[in-house]
Length: 251
Image (cartoon, rainbow, N blue to C red; front, side, top):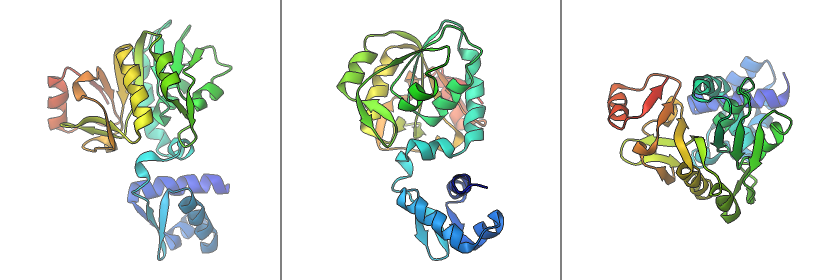
């Protein structure tokens, strides 16, 4: 197993269990404890974990705004499962606005059988990965956020406001009954607000860990979402509230 692949698996584990032990990881990956310590040192430099005696724990201070490369390596099966459920909502010839989230990226990877799609995005990663696809890709332009590989700011806002689209596909960091949909950084959140205004339908991709969580800044009220796609059945109080808001739920 390559070192990068092993570190990605460690990232998955630390997000699931919040803490990992050097001795356990050494046995699991069949490498020396010194190798695992070097892995954890690298992950600490990346801001993902904080090393502790005998292991490491999730760095809660940066958990809400991880780099795209890190987010893209976490829970890929869950993201793909959510993305698959969104495919039936998209028709040939549709126009989309797509945010720079790793879940939305998985969603676009599955749209190969759709024809004549137009995608407007502020994601550098989408622009690069889908440059040779059959999709018509429009960049928002704007100022680069290196951490999330996204474009933000007034130029991006102006571009978004030029277009009206069928569907906006977004993700978030938190979904709360009172505080609504929240995200981890203000510049990206502001651009998403413009996307929502220009879309006929808003699709939110959010796995079960986002429920009853509140992140740094509010994106939109719960009732402004048309479709919520998640990876498992929400609890009954949530199903009742989503029904009251006329939000279609797919899980």
